[in-house]
Image (tube, rainbow, N blue to C red):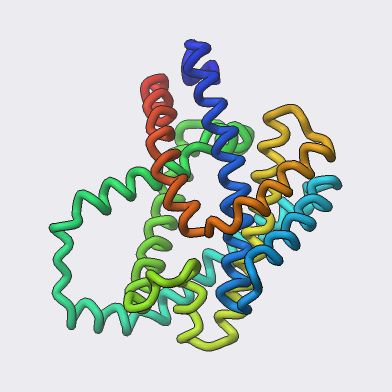
Length: 267
């Protein structure tokens, strides 16, 4: 934090933003878990919320390193899966753009502003991630190469997901997790595989966010774990998409503050 700003007030503000972001991420992941089972199996949100709250409490009360490390396996699988489904969707995408005259000029500013906020929202955890990577990426040349490679991968993934959403543009506004439904058009096996990966990733992300939040508060004990998990049951009925719509613009704007100080102090 001292490398970003020597101003203690700014540092405290950024620390508070990170803590709030981790808490919001935990609640959003719980809601995402509930949304999946509500959408796919019509299981009431309250029941799903209680189940994941219990699982989170049990996991957070024990050694969570193994659970979080699962993400190192799930993320590559998810990337490969999205790329593969993207290739299967190429013919539809070509036909779509040939048969539709897309005019985004009226909403250009809206989606551009939203994309900036969403990138900023995800950059909130930039500092702790970069600190952990510093032992592997220890030169500017390595940092530049990794940044370019990651940017290319994320851009291609974004294009694949965008083209998949075009496939379900007539019904995605009514779904919490539209990609799950869209993938079904390629076969039930793809939907099942994607669902398993997504749910596993949501759970491990939930554990990671919850652990990080409690650790930052320096109050990592069973009492506070119980409070965190219990409050997630109360928040989850708000809905996954609504929580995202509420939190990502809010943290997106706050994230711009962090980005500003990162850029300012990098020269």
